[in-house]
Image (cartoon, rainbow, N blue to C red; front, side, top):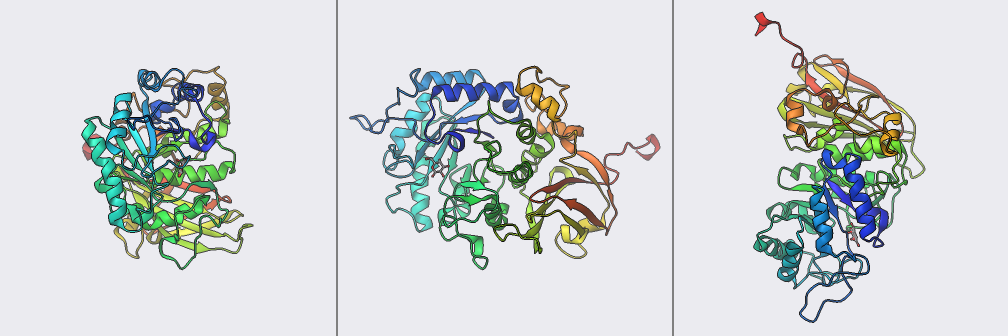
Length: 454
Ligand code: GAL
């Protein structure tokens, strides 16, 4: 989890941008939720290398020097993330690292870098087979390892050459799609034919949340501890989607266990967006010790299409730590839908063992689970300091997600909504472009047992 400059600033950021946002990561409690990597995404150096081939710091943007900034981040218990491309240039036409892997890895390690996002622009045609991509990205893996510094390695090859099939052997995460920017708007830059497996002709750009979810439904199961499929940075807070759409975007990214990298202006957040990004019950899905991604169980077309002709409902389900389950109803149509879904369809097959149990359902977006608007407003304007008792807030630096879940911390479970009996049906109304998301827990697990029952 972390924060990245690109979605909100493009290449136009400098040390003030970094400091302002880093301060907010701390004061708004994001760091203590786990958002602790600060990624300088592209445009960190001069346009040319020095005579000996070294990268050169951009002094105009970072007059204090990158080393000092890295130290400042570390002093705040934040991590320093850098960026380059496995190509001749980065996507912003700064020097790329192809052929300079060892030299650049050493340079970043000396600066105290903790994370590398490694892009795919200007790759000199060294793509098109898994061997070509693997070798190109593997060269940087070797170079990072040779530095002896612990640097999280995040591939950004947009899913080229089915990176989810080989990325786990050399990296910690891999982008599986082009950049996202809308909820549902189809884009020529990111084509998707219904009959095409994985929905990908070329990696693309301007991919919608729904397009990315469609692709992720095929491959999310490749994620696991040590290697996470990255659905792209979060757009929450950038203004291009409704609150319901941001809620859906954030829920799905969390439950699929994508890295949660914010890409917004942290000093310009609305209370609604702040409450989404800090929802402890949803982040608990992302940070679940079980480490399994949610799976799409079915998609059903409905009549009420939106202006792009998109109109469907989707049901997703996944396994959580210690037998809990996560269930999401997603309404991608533009009118509220009433859904009645039998347990066997939620769990995948008729007679499925899990569908023959009774479940307590905890709503992950109930009022009170997230920060109420009033509380969020006060924290944002500095009149309320976050503390252990702040409504809707969870500090995972104090009590880890695992400890909190083991202790049945109600902030992580969600709000009890009711019970679905064995073989029963879950019914819910889901607003347009919104989700209904629950943690399911076996009936009885949470109830206190009397002494003679023990
Ligand atoms: C793109 C990449 C973005 C961002 C950008 C920087 O290729 O997908 O996430 O890193 O380059 O120029």
